[in-house]
Image 1: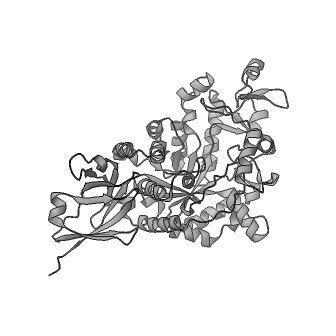
Image 2: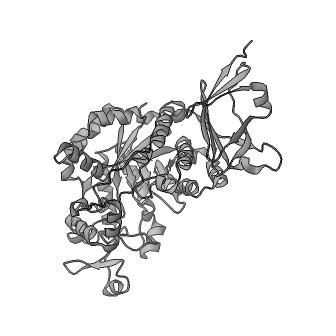
Image 3: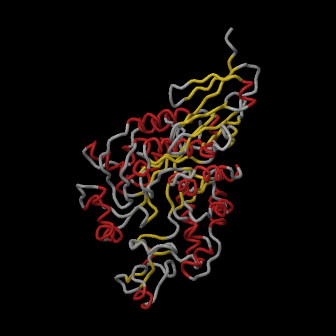
Length: 494
């Protein structure tokens, strides 16, 4: 299936620097993007991905790297991640970008172009990062250009040393930040109140859009005028709509994905983003709120198809550290069969438990969790069915099995169908058993029975069509139990 043909694509996030470090250890030499093997790309294609997001390909710099290597709080995190940590493992945050050129250690622009071409030969599209809020302390705009970054006073530096710093040339600048957190001390805040900065960032977008098929835009809500004003007390002209329109005027199929929080997804989708993070679903899955999950999945379908569904990414604690294996499987089945863009973070499907901070270029050796690996293999095989990409999706009703049994409220049921196929997703998102009747849809033909084949287990059920139409499909599910049923018609045996 080509990337453009899927309304609900599957996206794999790869930590590029960590992956190249792993390859370097294998090869006994420094690996570049050219060393990502065709066999690996074919494996991604065979798993059913349409997109690969390469995290961290842009050039970093020495000034921000030194901050990463000396910041006391971050040192604790590094030590927790790597017991055998060395200074060479700390290469600076991949979100402190000194130049939007492919890192020389990764082979530069030419190596990325060759990798993109190889991905395309396997039907895969390439997504990269754009960090609109800030740049590295090494970026030329910090010291070589006027009015590109926010400047500060001596008083601001004295009052808020966590948000401002003095550079070697004596000027005081603001660290990049959002209004709820202290500044990121390896970055400089861009000043969107300046038309010259907005123009330069738009031109940067246009340039890097030529090197990929889509961009994941970091903390995209920070460039909304009302958020920028709340953070910095400065007025800025709107940025995103005109910038996205400029890029799409050159490439109409180019995809913009927004990392966004604070329930501002719809606002960014209205400005031209194709997808926006669905943090609300993530939070409700992690805090085990089945009724709230159902309410969320009841939103308008056009809105839902613009959401990025995930249970893990590079910013979050690994899901296998937060949920049991059974909970993990149930959460993944809900997120990855809902409409929208489905995101899988590299290592998630293997049960990895250690989050790798974006300051590090190496991760620990971890063991695969066999049951999770098998589950994801089965689920990804199912998701290759075209119906999950371009079929009709419905959130199904589940009614009480008997009066005053409200456990049916904890069962999440969804369907995907087209003219030829019907699949039902059934998840008991609860710590104990739940019962209820699943209310269709059921395939409409003249067969007397329907066969329910669970593609995630050996379970097979034969049910009378009349009973299904009268009452629904009876469910009695143990804690966290889930099914992905393929439903087919069958004639009664004589």
